[in-house]
Amino acid sequence: ALEDKEKGPALTPGGIRRYTFDDIYGQNPEFAQVVERAKRAAGNDASVFIYGETGTGKELFAQSIHYHGNRRNMPFIAQNCAAIPETLLEGILFGTTKGSFTGANEMRRGYFEEADGGTIFLDEIAELPMASQAKLLRVLQSGEFIRVGSSKVLKRDVRVIAATNVNLMHAVSKGKFREDLYYRLNAVTVMMPSLR
Picture 1 (cartoon, rainbow, N blue to C red):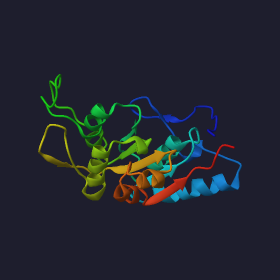
Picture 2: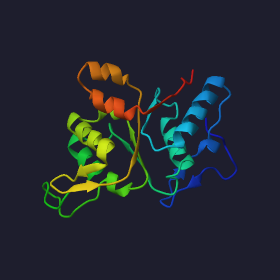
Picture 3: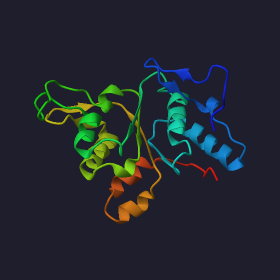
């Protein structure tokens, strides 16, 4: 739950509410253990996988990990992988070049360029298309990616925090999620307790 403070959470330069561990509290000892695990995760640059039911605060924890760590002064960008059509998601994440598709009148930087030095939070990661999963794996391995419609390799330093309410090992066994990407994302796992 979020603590209702007089002034509320700080705002980012874009006017988006910025949450930290100071804005999160719970009475349950299991919840306190999850907060401590997330705080430890904030102390390094490893990718983090947050698993939990809808409404358990996965994005709040992702923001808290970012703003508690050494990337706190760099961008935090969140993207729900299920909210964008598959045909557009790759361009949003990796950018597009002028003329790469009908209506692409200019080069557009993707979130991995915008978040250089910071963190990208990919919610509903199980919905990421297989082609984009391969590109995300490359980013996690080397920091490299290519804009849609380009052949130029770009390199950026971005921490990835991913979340889902889906059993990803089940998705791996069904061939819907890459096993190598699953293990790359699971450098640190934070299991959110049920609100029940």
